[in-house]
Length: 92
Image (cartoon, rainbow, N blue to C red; front, side, top):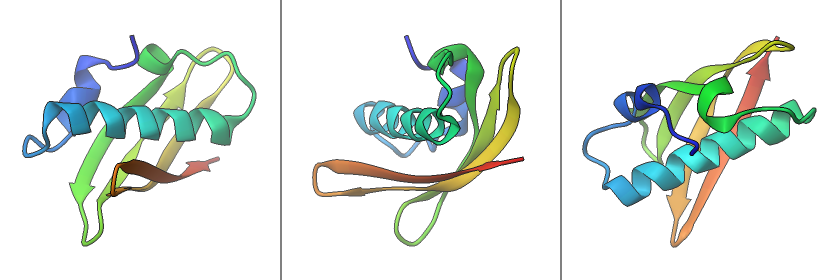
């Protein structure tokens, strides 16, 4: 309900599927909260285009686009223990 095929293709194939879904949820929830105005469909409006490994996690980039907003985002995601974290910045 929240993952498009394009999102899965952007994620590293080395990740286990469970981690892939958790990271994608974490990214999309952070974008939604950063946007802050609601009315966003996680599957269709938020797209992950890049997910590259870094020393401590992954650098991500993508866009939020629907009738009322068109913004790109980038940031970092990582896992610590059983928790997933995201630091996302919406670009204007």
